[in-house]
Image (cartoon, rainbow, N blue to C red; front, side, top):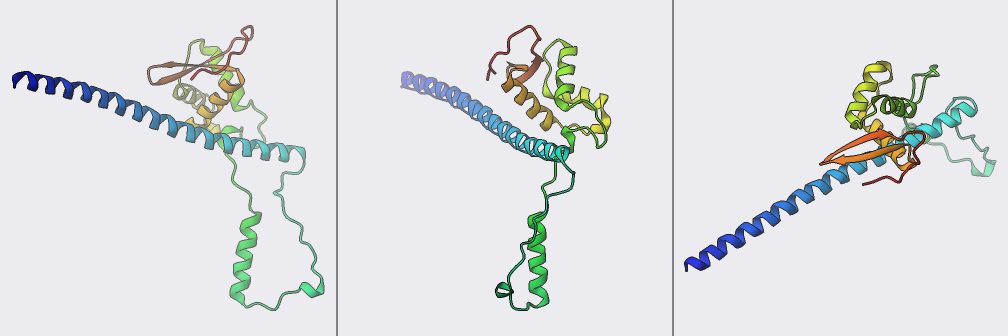
Length: 192
């Protein structure tokens, strides 16, 4: 009986340690998933902002509007009451509005200052040692308080630069650090 109790206790201890390890791994995966979702959303909004900036710099910076197509007399709808007209106006207006852009990744209007990517690479090159996204954000916010730099945008910028080989990522435990790739070093693929 004592031997069975000892085996039972050992088995419980072994399973408890396995469960703890699996829970830790699950938490890490959930954290990584949340981080990846945030980065994907930030990259999507940054791409939309880049598209808006490129369209705006190529021509006038006015929002796009659809040109109304004249209707023939056969297509003229029957008169509508006020409620239907208001509803139709709201629907039409909501379709022509453009999505808001993320101002935190660009310099203020009228400023021809460096891009966020230039600032990030400049900071990492200056530091010489790996820095976390929070460290980079704090330094850039201190140096450029008028830009409203957010950590999610900095993190997504860093990840995009890692993918292009301009920045190197390294992990220490659960923390991620970034360092600039030297001009003489050949860009290496991102490590996970």
